[in-house]
Length: 500
Ligand code: BES
Ligand code: ZN
Ligand code: ZN
Image (spheres, rainbow, N blue to C red):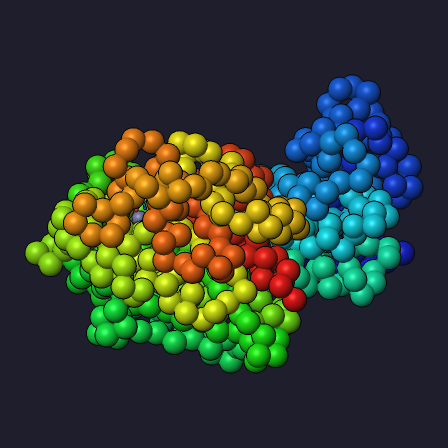
């Protein structure tokens, strides 16, 4: 999909379709065209359209205001809508346009923004909503042949405003970057495991970083062993596809400024290993690298945005497979910081690979560490696919994260993390066990395990995205399909920027 931003011209644009946004009390839309107002008013009187959130009405061949077709999108009760509501409205609009096989459309941005003080953020959100909605993973689908039905044309979208200024232009550009990188994270998540092994993941990141402001370093299996990453090495050892440790560095501030560290779980496939998973929906375990995807997308976005902050990102990538070399229940790993863990269930592998990455991040003496991981099925039980689980012992960080989420529009929910949870993770034959000795609170005990690999003085938060990284289209209208959501790319960008 192509999106452009332009000033509303006296003469209507070339587009075939006009998209207007209307809130509930407003039926007398912008003073564009009397014919248009009449159309919408009549629809409202007849009860066909009320301006509710997510409601749409499409008028084919309306021939109003110089456009052939007209789409009106409801934005709900309030006159001033939040950035997230703008994102939702844009997503709803794009979906409706796609359903009507529309090839060209113009969003009347002013009908959505109505002179809001928040207009630049709304602009950013509208662009994000539209571009996120247009994402499709079709690399492995054959191109239609000559006599097949033609592929639906790509939607050409123009966003028009009468008051085009620098801040709206900037909002537009930011939206493009954030959507592009979120879609890149989705691509990684959707990619099947045979086409995304740890080494392929590393190569893709390296290739994409060429010519950018990102420095990428990749450690192979031998280096991983040499650096005492016993967890990453041990989990990766069961697979014919070797593990990788991927380091991304971006310096947007003075070299002396302490970095912010992002850490991602990058299991390109999680079969469970010897403690193998049931076969139902095991294919979905391709998205067990979504934490890595979030971190990667955020790093590329920060570089493109030229954020004035230093950020280091670490991805622990492996494939968890059963084999003659695979970790067995009872095996003990020695981690980067010298702590040991006994593997009582080889399916609790995420914490084992993250342990080394977090310890390494701690060594950088950063301002803060954030990780994203599809860590536990338990978080899906607790929060479903509406909220990412947030685990931290740092109250100040909770506030900072809430602000970042307010800006990104992504939903997270604070969960408990205490010494009691850590108690349940003590090992019998090693310092820690990789599963809890008691039932329940599986996400919190996993988080407590991770916390043992970060120096307590460093502000640290863990995000469990097992529930939100996949199949969330039923919640968010700016995701058109099943598959990876690209969650946390936008929040990580906001979080990193908050240290400027
Ligand atoms: N990758 C899974 C967690 C997961 C589950 C992600 C469902 C997405 C959807 C993780 O490695 C795992 O298997 N965790 C186990 C831990 C248990 C053995 C303590 C789990 O949650 O069942
Ligand atoms: Zn697992
Ligand atoms: Zn896993």
